Length: 354
Ligand SMILES: [Zn+2]
Ligand SMILES: [Zn+2]
Ligand SMILES: [Zn+2]
Image: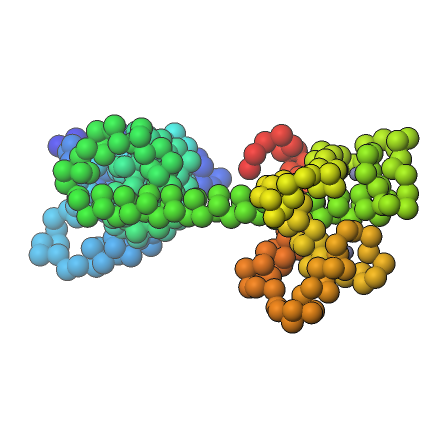
């Protein structure tokens, strides 16, 4: 049996970092024994105060009082055990040690109930996740009841599944833990559905926003006039330059020109006319002006609804509502984005994605 030279270095470490002048420690009264046969001298009072599990081990009655007390920590590399004992003494763990033995230290801190060390390990492992190590960390996170780390692993597996699938870790998991494999695959499935759903939502939102902009342009063309089309009592201003939403305005002006001259018309099955017709109807549903509105057919659509005493159907109503709210939502998220930008600028993080 060898006694750890590191153990003496341990006291030096503790006394040099913990307090000044150095703390006087009594003679060690317990040994921590590793799988490799390393004996780390330690103090039962310190181990007991740092971990409830050690406390109960130490409080167990001993058969032979004269024999020396030994606590076995097996199945982990000896240097990981040394780092662990160091933490119990000093509440500190160097980054390098976390990088080398993060997985073992997480297991030890979980088994021996040392929450501060567990927190450090979870944070460090979470920052160093790769496609290569993620399956190992995921399994450990599940065993050690570290839900945040577990979720982080699941997300990484989901986004880099092709790479993860090719690792030894994944093959091992498939052979040894089909239940966990199923959990992971289910998460990926749900994750994809969530992403699809939010993509669909974004697409729909952008369509409503386009329609909302088209409504603004239509009103502006019919009230103030844009480059080639204007209200009937006004000559379209050739002098006027393109307006601020000209990309949309231009398309709508072309559509209006077409609508005025098309021979096929809506009933003849002209798709462009049909689109114009829908835009005009949408405008009329949104428009709050009564007789003063200069948008063509605005009044007629309103009258038609009144005369027929027919309520607009539900889907149409929903569309109108969404077009109206699209602008508010977009300006709200714009404000939110601007606020985040400001925050980043304050933190000197401009140009980085958080
Ligand atoms: Zn315009
Ligand atoms: Zn047409
Ligand atoms: Zn109107």
